[in-house]
Length: 221
Image 1 (cartoon, rainbow, N blue to C red):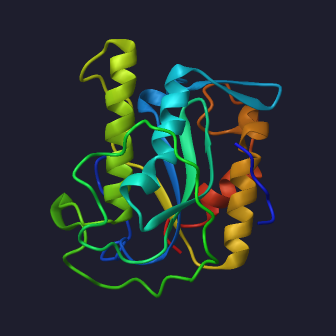
Image 2 (image 1 turned 135 degrees about the horizontal axis):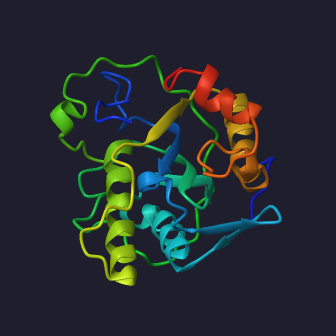
């Protein structure tokens, strides 16, 4: 993917009461079930996708086809997880989201607008209440992506019903342009730090950048 750096248990890890359908930028990490390296391998600092990896890549790039209010920023498919920035440009209109899940057709990622920092968490008791999908929200988008990728990967493997993803996912609300820049850089260089990645079953050391995003910073700041 060409990119310009300039330009778990069952309990929910979402920010309680936050409206994840409101405009803003969100850093999302989705991991493979049991940390299996399903999507390929990193060789000499480059990610080499296999067939399942190409499916995940295509399903991700297809998100704007099914959620027109969403634009894609930097993302990468790694051996056992996906990192990506999703930008909700505006609230979804009732007819924005089709009945079908995200598919596996290729789509060219859109260029996102400048980040408008989301306001302080809005206490909306209707948001993702009891797991109820909210129209056009980040959980709904991620759920659709995971479902589509699972369906196509299991067809490829001949394993209907087999789990592909961990049950939850990680997200970080991006509140400033500086945070957006740093997260973009983290994503685009992720493949070069695979030997340090906490998701790598064969990791060989500490990754300070990873601790920055997944350790010292709470999930929703």
